[in-house]
Image 1: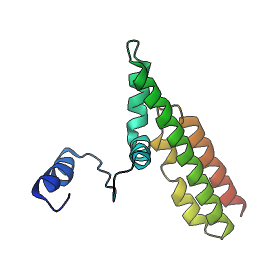
Image 2 (image 1 turned 90 degrees about the vertical axis):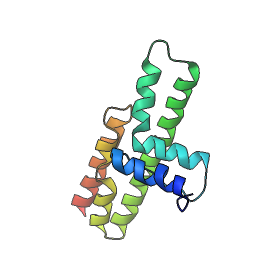
Image 3 (image 1 turned 30 degrees about the horizontal axis):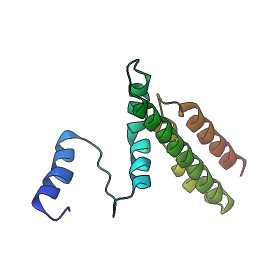
Length: 127
């Protein structure tokens, strides 16, 4: 836990000193962990590892699962942005899309993320 000296050191100080991103969850959930990994850059790492010619089968399975989770996250962001546009909150919609393409750059979902961001921007401009 964060209040313990080891938790504070390992989960706050070390990532801060290394310039790393730390994702804190209220409780452990495999789905939440996969979601954080997929969105936090783990998808690119897993896809690169799976592309190695001597990669074990579980690495490929992990990369596929992370891609599924990340694709669902992109669709969730699209849905939230479309709802914001429907409520007349174009700025909120654009904020939902901010950095989406960059977050998935170099992955199998880069094109999809860029397309979704462009569609939402066009939707905001039409309103």
